[in-house]
Image (cartoon, rainbow, N blue to C red):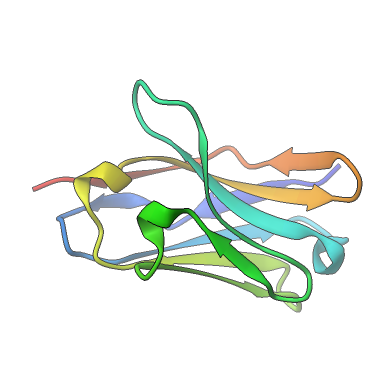
Length: 116
């Protein structure tokens, strides 16, 4: 069983930055597509960013140019650098590990609140 542990969330003001981390308990991290989802209050969960084993990234339109996803296979960790945060970025952020063909593991989530 894979465990994903997120960290780095918190309360920040608009315009600030945060960096989320997600550590996987074990491999096969290097062959997994890693992702970050978020769920805002009263809204459904949405994909924020993902990164394939080869490093190809994908972002939601709402975060393009502000967020950067990266991975360190030696540390089995994926990161989400979030800059120029907005109140609408508020939500619980979840890390995911997806393995071909249909297995996906989820972390427990970390709260991000952007408020003045």
